[in-house]
Length: 230
Image (cartoon, rainbow, N blue to C red; front, side):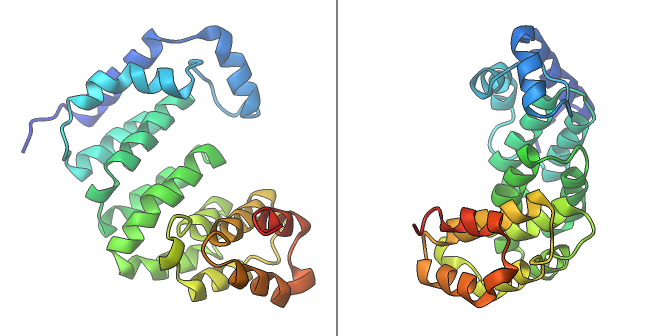
């Protein structure tokens, strides 16, 4: 096994690279876009990825998954949002290394400093693959569909986003139905997004689902769902 530095040490090194490339003039607009929820270094995505590329290249192709999650957790503790973006990039890049036993740690990341910018990528590109590789987790995700935390609900709604023809229609329908009474913007938006994405694969199914639930479907969900159907 490669002798990686301690996760906290590596996370600090990543943050130092980000800080060295900070663009203060961009930081305020980026914070405003995120409703002042987070501090920013002011790095757009290309600059952020370029800043940490040399360090990430040193990892090779197969970092230990426990070490990887340790780095992500350390990055999550920093104030600047770019640190969480780097953590998400790491988890997405090496998602295939993660196992079912890591799901509670992923759920903790979803719930900490939760906002759509981190949650959606974790849902579609980390949870999605994990549930393919570990089918036993699907029941837990089904449980998240009615969780009191809206971000875990959003993960439940969106984790099949990239499944296309492999989408489990029964599970998708059940998850959507379980959230028809939700008034939260992020839940309604996620429902519409899930339907819109699946309409690429099975537009007839999406139309039928919308028709079957009629007035129960919020205007926001319906508008999002119909963007691809016309």
